[in-house]
Image (cartoon, rainbow, N blue to C red; front, side, top):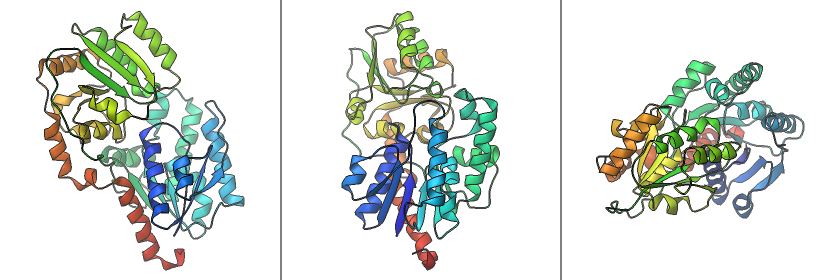
Length: 363
């Protein structure tokens, strides 16, 4: 089959999944084309064909990217695609011209909802426009595949339930690493991994750390527009020498395995792969009680109310006191669930192959 997909490159988990999916499709002998603002070395090495789409800096960059992608698919389609895989409902709208021909559009949903756009400070007119575009993209989809049950619910409630079926295809846990118990004594070693944007609420994490009266270090892996503000907040709270902003790192698994706990205080998450990566590394994970986080952690002992720095500080003290749940118990729970054990990219590719087999005219 000929597969086409497009994505705005970012350091997050959704982008890593996209790269793994296209690389697997190419490895198995399919013709793969991808569009983005720059080349991806891993995809080029796998033999994928690259198509440039501009993405200027600034808040309008995503709008310009999607508009250019739509025009390319409408007037100069990159390939006679049989399957187009979208990274979200607004991407599906840009890929819609391919769906008018022989291609089936499979829409993977990682997020992008009005509540998130409001949290990021977009103006009301832009949120309404994005919502209209998202609904249009969902109506053009052959299948809608959110990565968590909460995203499936929000797809129906916030964007309206279109006719295509909505089926959850959650992220998968990486290969398990050898674990070790937290050594007594020493500092409590904490870690955060993610984009430094408003939705991730690193400010709540810093406020909680300022309330702790115990020895700790916290390494923040990631970057984004709020980094300078967060660094100033850390200094103002007296956290210098205990909180370290490391930027993006390629060795996240190693950082996780050296930490006692991962903290994810986001206002919203779809199905954060970093939680599964932490569990695979044998590292405890704490998360806000929002979005798809409770679906992965499945233990009230690891959750805290979103935006509540006092509650997060209490959870961190419990980790220090050794009262938190053993992460190996959660790993065994996740291993019994195919949704979290079979690679996500394998499941999505199998769905694409099924569409081609059901409709031979696609190929």
